[in-house]
Image (cartoon, rainbow, N blue to C red; front, side, top):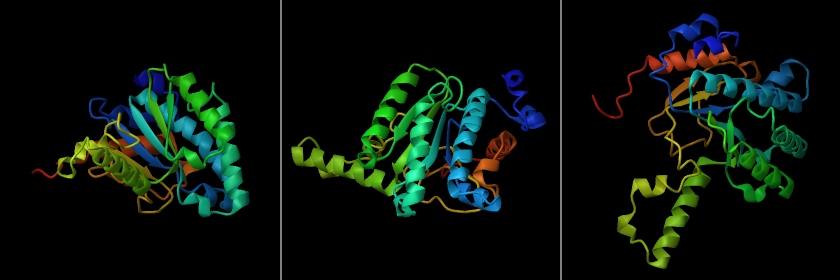
Length: 251
């Protein structure tokens, strides 16, 4: 496996330290700092978002080669609609371009899934999501979840409403509700909870990302803006994860 990765610089020699038997199964990535990256270079924010999208392809392909099974990337939150209309429009166009680039999308042998409230997205974007999910469904490598119009609180409310509907229909009693039932109604119901969440750009918060799934996640923060986040940085995050003692409330 590492032979296939040696050419993916700048990870370099750090890869030799990675324990392939102790990889996180599911990594969440908050792709933050695109706008700041662009501002530092005197570019429009849209240029930063485009650079960030390209970097997602690089990192997801690298992670898949390393042996990571699932990545959830925070692409557009339920709160991002508050941004200036020009920026939102540019993000939606970038998303459309990204989805249409099916043969390059997210790297080799990566299966794409989209989570979030798709009702607010255009018919054109929803069509492309359906197409790309179908196009990549038989790939047996890493699964990349794109969180689009996603919010952790919204996801939990959605799950609770489904359970309330079950109660109204008489198929469930309120006292029978369990954590497992809620988990089964999350967008990521087929995926292990997040073992590791990575957030570059210097912010130290979750920003409504994978709230249910991150109850026992490890966190890795850095000051690096997402477009500058390299395979070496990803490897550093994995190594730090592997050096932590995950007790899950035990001793």
